[in-house]
Length: 394
Image 1 (tube, rainbow, N blue to C red):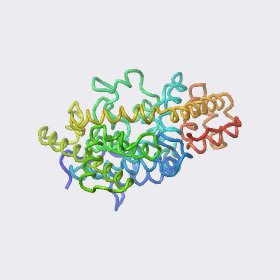
Image 2 (image 1 turned 90 degrees about the vertical axis):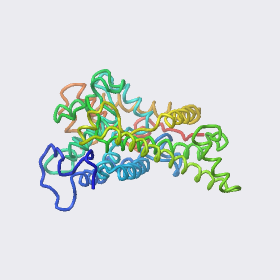
Image 3 (image 1 turned 120 degrees about the vertical axis):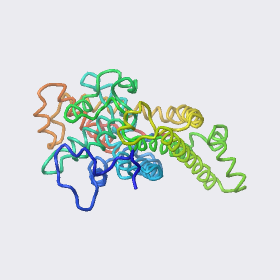
Image 4 (image 1 turned 30 degrees about the horizontal axis):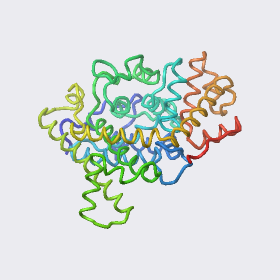
């Protein structure tokens, strides 16, 4: 039984292009399945989080990250009586709009697209699922339900109005504005509790796996983590329970405790906030003026210390920064080249090029193409067109 404040499948606001209901899947199950079978989802296999795709088989990719986020989202949603299928669908779609080379690629695209309406990976995910996936006979995109589109657009909170993220103080990214003009996503409200669960599951997953990847890369050690909140107590508990445990098992046991603490904290906070607010519907959740799914204040402060450590020791490590500079140069080379010579785009993109009646529309076509590249393909294209390639992290 779903809680009264969960998204009820039979109360969905439907799809932009009406379709017959499935006899054996709910609307949100269909959304989930369409996302999994999309081309953009498959490309996540060769897009990275922090490290460039060719640097090692053990580092997380966008695909493995997305699977982990979906697992966490289903767990939390199930405990809270929410719609697990919708939470999973939003989680599976949340990174579809990411560029090659992680946030480094997104930073480059934001800068390059600033004169042409901006770039934002959440907005780009919407553009993918409403326009760029072209497999169905009756419509462009995946024709997802309103609730899933809402979750993709604002799982991190409202994007307009008094409660909006400061990042969106300026004009909306064009991709988000276009979708919202076609179908009002109520961007000034919070998303459903299911979408909020997907957002916090993203935080849980990357906080956990970036610690794993940083240790594996040698950018820091277990001794460094002993000095931090959350991670230090986790290692101490493992040492008390399993004295003399070998290094890899010790690492895994400690970090799974960090993972568990985050999930348990989110569930406890959500249960307390829901019991206090007593929402009667999903619209009550949307209009609360604050998120209902969040970390407790003490754990949030502890995680800020861990993330600060990761920022300096991992995301801004000299070896990582050297590769960031190289892949930024690659995007800076590719985007202007395709803008000057759109005939270099593949044949299947030429119809979009022909329909672009000014430079802004052409830039958006080029952005769609470059943002959709995998790390591997971007490296190959740069080598083919410029005769240079990125070097692995030393």
